[in-house]
Image (cartoon, rainbow over all chains, first blue to last red; front, side):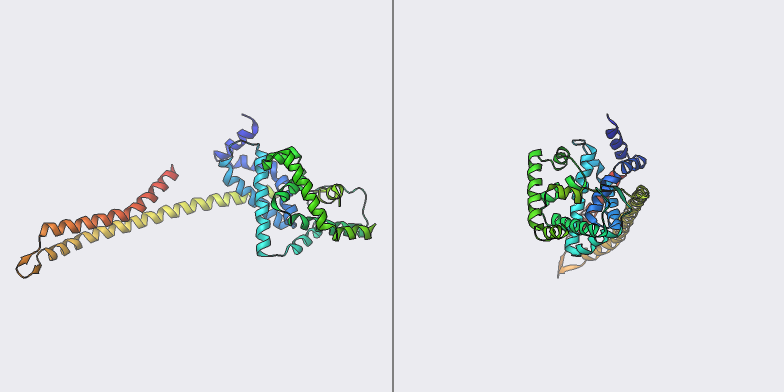
Length: 198
Length: 119
């Protein structure tokens, strides 16, 4: 029995201490997804906490057919998409949610800018990122899932294929089609922005 | 907008959970555990109260039924005709037992569930 199985078995037996270990291991991955989806730090924190409560409640359903990481990603992804659907239905205020992204920067773990951007470049990038995220949200759910796992979670095709239980070839196709659809959606707004900037 | 643009726009940022995140989650877990235990305790206490109420009700009904049976038995149905006392008593008792068992069934089921959960 490997460490992962022992951890799960201990949690199933009621050990909250071992669950705390699990939270420590996966908190950044889960929070990262929630943060990308929610946009705002506070909402992301609530969403990520909800996901861990869900994991705790459903841990008895984990049979070990996939790895724990895959199972946690699956739960996180589904919960994030549920959250997004509810947001669409209830508030219809995604614009304000994403505007909050600009404000809070302190929880970045890693940022890879190739150079120090000027304020103008920075603003254009933020607008582009906002537009791309909006475009992702407008995609059919099967494409959204692939985009979230590939871009936000930085997962490989194989890992995505495990989480979504789809062949790698299908993942590649979904990713290709998702990019095409985003390209179509953004051809006006971002295309113009990039041209103006260039 | 090609693949590389998306990479740079979306993949550049990885967020880290706040330092207090694990503590916050664990607080919620403990809170939820306590609240579910409290709910279970209240549920079983409520069930016991209902069961006790029903038992009291049936105990009180029994003498009342005796009175009714006696009244019914010795009352003349038609002039010159006396109602068969044992038959009437049997019918009333049968009906009472039926009602009693029907009322007790859901509570017995719920109690079984609670006992199973406790074990």
